[in-house]
Image 1 (cartoon, rainbow, N blue to C red):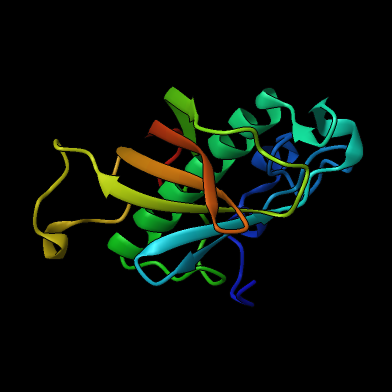
Image 2: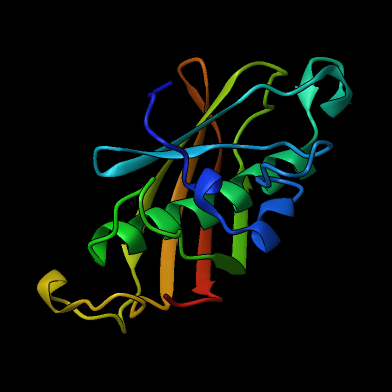
Length: 165
């Protein structure tokens, strides 16, 4: 895993209780999403109780971590496009307006890598130089869930901003 700061570690206190990504939720997954070049990366290791059937991961967990990876990816894109610095500036918070998950193969109970690509919504400014802080309101994130060298699930999410700086 890259050692850069995870966007979820920059969420303000009210948003830090999310079951999927909240650093203040001891019972939750506490996933961490980080920029990795033009993509985003989350690594997650499921526990034995995340079983659907022997040695396979429960589909609801897969949808949940794709969801939280997507909200983190949207926040990273917004911060980068608006000139913010992860670790120095407050993170914008996005929530899921729409989520689709395609299950392509059984997902083993094994370390997972979620690789995302965040895109500005068509209604956003087309020139990054014209983007003002807080102006990105909607982001689309495409995610692949990898176990070893196989993509076992894909997600597509539309995220909307719930706060502005």
